[in-house]
Figure 1 (cartoon, rainbow, N blue to C red):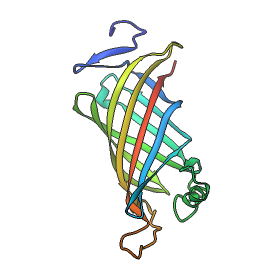
Figure 2: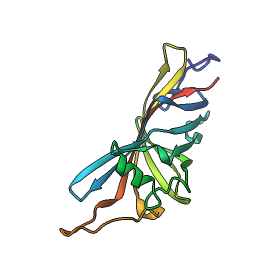
Figure 3: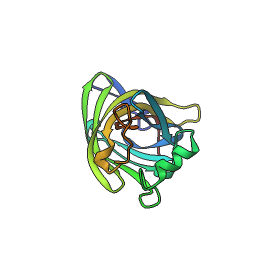
Figure 4: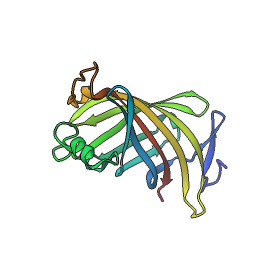
Length: 193
């Protein structure tokens, strides 16, 4: 399929990958989530309901790039009081810093369908390097004629490195909210005409 001008896929290093081009995150098929430990005994999961991303798939796949924007106020843990606290100046300060931003700086192939996406994550105006473990999940054409591919990505950050330092010490030892936060992203990207 690599010779056709309307190719959906191409072969690269034993994989069938998307044709070069610009793709955007499909709002209807995405999850930008996170997991934090609560009181050192359980996990709290949440997500950001509003996020956009543009993925530029290069002719050389390892030269591809990603730019993403997440709306801080769209945080959702299904608990209104907790969400309000997370939007407050004690955490994301969504009014002063309305977006979280990610810009990739490189792509490394690992093995099979696994890659490492390096980049810079900005939260509350603080930018730090991150590495996302990315699993390419396939490519195809939707029943609506759209060229798409799927992916999942994850990383772990230390929230205090981004100025998210609010916490409460527990009488039994430890703290109310973990420093380490796991970020989990899943989605489909749709090729732009």
